[in-house]
Amino acid sequence: MIELTLGSAFIIGLLGSSHCLGMCGGLSSVLGAAPKEGANRHRIFSYNAGRLLTYTVIGAVAGLLGEALLAAIPQSAVVLRTGAGLLMIAMGLYVSQWWMGLTRLEQIGAILWRAIQPLTGKLVPVSNHRQAFMLGTLWGLLPCGLVYSTLSWALASAQWQQSALLMLAFGAGTLPAMLSMGYAGEKLLQRLRQPRFRSVAGLLIAVMGVVTLATPFYHNGHIDHSEHTHHQHHDM
Image (cartoon, rainbow, N blue to C red):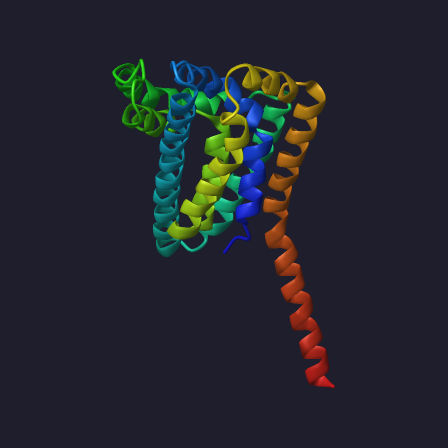
């Protein structure tokens, strides 16, 4: 139905890394506060593995919902795609800090997070890989406009396998920044927060949103043109 590539999802995660570091970087740094450097890395990897698992699962759920919705109301495809495109544009404006309206969506997600957050307290301080992994699975549900925007793509794809892979690819895009902890992470965060980088990243994400909106019109026009040409040749 929708030409959403895994590469595009990965790029969105990569470009939105400044937002991810701002929300999750502090917690990941706490995971790195173990006596041994090897333990630091392993716990950080376990935490991020849990986070990506949650993204994949909610992506699959979104895909199943999209499938069910399209089966019941085929015309909803336009609504799903329009919503995905608009949210992606809003995310681009959010990342660039040109318009912060997406924070309202995060406030809605915060209602669910208030029920989940007490569970995270039972896992801190993190002392083993299992705790780090479980903390990551919970932290994957943190209210995040970037996640919600990408999840709208997963919903619009209406194929649970593809939706799951889209969210996994998005999570993989956030890994380079999230795996850079401690001093290196702070330096990277400073660079990612530079206005020039945020502006370029936000603009690219917004362009993806525009493409998401425009693609159906391109295809419809292409199909109409092809049919018109076919009829012309047939009449001749």
